[in-house]
Image 1 (cartoon, rainbow over the protein chains, first blue to last red):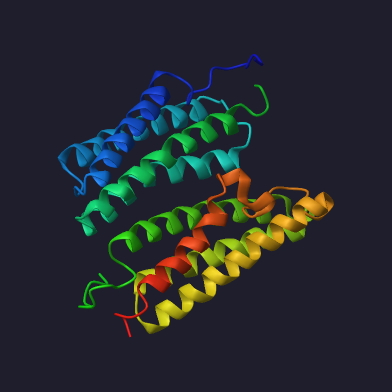
Image 2 (tube, each protein chain N blue to C red; image 1 turned 90 degrees about the horizontal axis):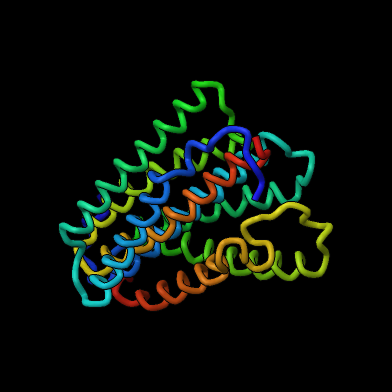
Length: 130
Length: 138
């Protein structure tokens, strides 16, 4: 464990909650896909809440940047940040277009990718160790 | 939308839409990564970064090809999936044989191990899907 000069804005309860929520929605969507069910209300609400959490996370990051903190790899960090907040809307739109089990599979796939991006976000913030 | 085709087995519905979603994700990942590498440190590993750029382009065109679903779309997707498969195998073998050639990771290095080997599986799935849907979209 390297000690970081400033606390990472993307490494707290909100980030953890986003990861857990995303994985929960992924599992729920996977069960729906296996049972031949189209995306249900739970999946869409889950995507909505996930998006709110990710937007809140982005605001935290931007506030930290506004306050003088800098990510270790700024280019990659903001790339991941923009990608991250686009993921739930992408899943939403594609799932709406595909009201079959495959729509649920899409939600599952995107919700498996989102946690990976959150972790990459944390790594690109901390790469210099402060 | 591209839903006007009455064909029962178009490449852009059902499992195909999931495939398009994954292709889109890879297009985003590869494009941003390559864009950043080319913009900030192109001199360090031009071959690897140009290759990342090419891979990104192929993913985008493949997604578009599958989504358009017509004759041309299928041709595009077929070409892209083939290029991807050859690319990921060639780069995978080369990156194992000669690490100097790709000092920085690309999507296709080590058969896409940095991306859970999905770059290796994706073109195969794409080709299987194109084969599976070949008849009804004549």
